[in-house]
Image 1 (cartoon, rainbow, N blue to C red):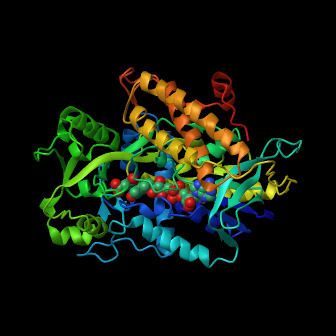
Image 2 (tube, rainbow, N blue to C red; image 1 turned 180 degrees about the vertical axis):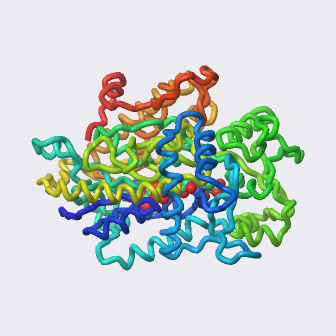
Length: 540
Ligand code: FAD
Ligand code: SIN
């Protein structure tokens, strides 16, 4: 089946939904989403960093962002995102998002949280369920909009490129092939504007705070289509993921540290000050490395976050979801320290875009976590990602509408060819490779890296990619196979970026290159160079 829309958005997190509402003012919008489990947005706890208090200023937010980014942020982008933040947050409030308010005193004033690297309280939140509240309000608006079609259980496979469709004009993106999981059919979606809003790639790692959707699909699709990808080595590890045999990927928000929680060892001794004078509230890269070092030094399986000083009434009111989750596992956070470990959390690099979300492939845009605008540099400041997604969605809406007006054509494209593909005989290959990738990324491409470990990871990943590609060409595609294909490629891109960076900066720490280079540079991944060096052909 071939379907046409004025705008095609892949992903239904904060970025995709915000943009859908903008684009629907001028035409038909289709949102394709895997949606088998909620997006990362739904899990956001801490909140949105935005200057709203009189004690704060744009300049301070800019400085904190630049400081966390370890010299690699694009300052013009930082200034723009910070300055446009208040208007975008106000728009969210107008759409019905209920941020927590201060309980005493001035009505209408928002309660502001604090997180690592922030010099002021500036994080708007809905208790510890900010993402859920934002997604609820955006979905309410999207679901009732006559111009928006949301297609769930739809997995985008690959982008449609004009030259592949036999069109002689300048190369551009024409839409996407997507698998409808319910019909088990692959459809063609055509549009002058295709937007990647597919989120990050936390599932590349064995331990992650991310839900199952985070398999790096957008970066993989963009790379295969020849769009520019950058800075993939900067994977942010969140310092405090709950450590418990029955808890998968549950985050203990940095906002707890903002309210006074302290990282301690088994004996109850605070240790973060030994690594940075800001202690438990230093930027994330520093705190995650401190925990990693502490665990390696002592052989401990985890460290602890102690917020017992705040008392039960405060914790039940400010962090109800975390308090309840821990309590269900038998951890009373009002009286016991919480066992925590670092886990892969956020992809700072991604599809390289300008301030309007334009990628290097005309007609293809990227916004939200999948994109690399230059805001985060080598390490994202906490709670800046929801902000970036909102600002970029707004700007992308304006620029994509103009592009669509000037480039309205819909080219003829071929339907998906099934060829001789048959149903796979041995699905164990998929589950085995999936586990192997996540384990090797954790062991060899984690918080502290070496050349030797990266090279080991590289050669294993190349084998796994070849095996997965073989599977992809010979057997009927399934959602699991598509995700494995993306996960293996994105893991390899992380390794390629890491090998290119011959220094330690922000989230990339190498024992072989412990120093910081004088000149801060992005790592761009050029498909034709990488392909000729590795012999790895991932052409669509
Ligand atoms: P997502 O919200 O991840 O949405 C991606 C969407 O793309 C999903 O709908 C998915 O189904 C869809 N998708 C993916 N691949 C495909 C495909 N092939 N085809 C179709 N659809 C596809 N940031 C903050 O600023 N503040 C916080 O407090 C905060 N807390 C966090 C807590 C947790 C536990 C986590 C995991 C992250 C947190 N972050 C926070 C980061 C932030 O939540 C994410 O960066 C942000 O929500 C990403 O939004 P997004 O719209 O780009 O992508
Ligand atoms: C948290 O609440 O600790 C997550 C905030 C973020 O990732 O920005």
